[in-house]
Image 1 (tube, rainbow, N blue to C red):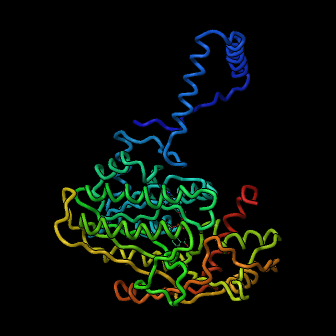
Image 2: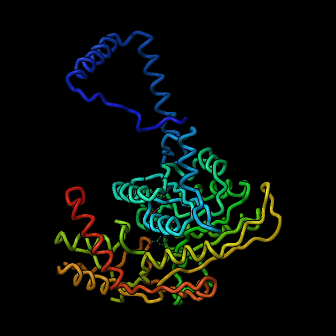
Image 3: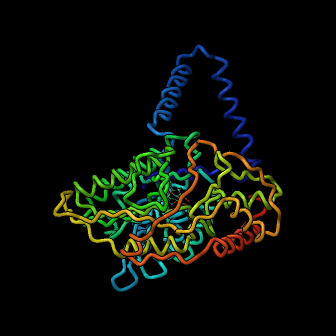
Length: 428
Ligand SMILES: NC(=O)c1ccc[n+]([C@@H]2O[C@H](COP(=O)([O-])OP(=O)(O)OC[C@H]3O[C@@H](n4cnc5c(N)ncnc54)[C@H](O)[C@@H]3O)[C@@H](O)[C@H]2O)c1
């Protein structure tokens, strides 16, 4: 059984706690009043070594893993992953407490697939929202295990307990601008974590088929629209994009060497209920309601900045379509036995909308006028426009987005008002 970081129990009766605390304090003071004692300096030395050891983690994000192991735990993992329909799948969903992960997990479970979630619940954005999504999934019997995709011991154990047929890999460090604050988190999750996962999948018996989230950001400074999968993607505009592009190349190498079946999905600005609070449509909604000014970007020559906003339900359909058409991996005992499938698809909406029109739609839905501050798009990672060509996904699994921005935002606003209406204090 691994130790848990939730184990620290603080005494609930302050009256009892106080004298103990002052005793400790006195004991410490007693030692401190004799600093020349060798035992004291020995203690300080040990503490220093311990602190240095704690800080020597190669990454800025220590691996957080909740307690796991034991027969009860295995039962829970198996029960969540259990296939409940004829020819269903058993899917490991990484990033299951995230925006897309929650929706995909719910949809898979709904149709009878077994789903086990894995998420490290990092604090890139409001953890209470991730916990609320976890609660939602837990109510329908989906277990999200708290752990990092870099934790090889844990991930290996999961593959020992369950023979996953598929992995839906959605865990990542998302967002473009956060790279200026925490660049290593992108390498930690999008590169190191992905390699760790692929290493374990390649040795798993049987090898699962893997569908993973890439991003429209790989198109970078491309100016040819609509973006096609065959377009060049070697000019990333952000570290996020660079790590997502690396992911595609790393995946290709694992497919080539080990026969892993791999499908990359390039999502285009996904939005909807339970969305990500760091994204523009979410931040705009929050600030418009608060009466705060919002930054509306335009390009250098007063040109519009636009996005191919894609509604979450359409993305979910695309994810399921990709899983359903994924062929089996061909390797066994860590060795390739034949060529395996390697695919990359755009999942977008094919109708870009300017950010200024997005704000106008929100104003109407929220019935509040926005205080717009029009600004030049800074050169810190965002591109001027995105626009997907989706014919490949259409051909492969009939992908066809059906929700326009007006309709999708209406659903988002309804969810937002309900969710934060109940939790006004914690958010505003
Ligand atoms: N939402 C979009 O518009 C969009 C667009 C393009 C690509 N994507 C990609 O789609 C995927 C899902 O995005 P999302 O919008 O749901 O983001 P999200 O941040 O809501 O979800 C990602 C989840 O992964 C978890 N996670 C991060 N690093 C982890 C690690 N090392 N180990 C375990 N869990 C980890 C996070 O806690 C989070 O819950 C990501 O790969 C993202 O890059 C999203």
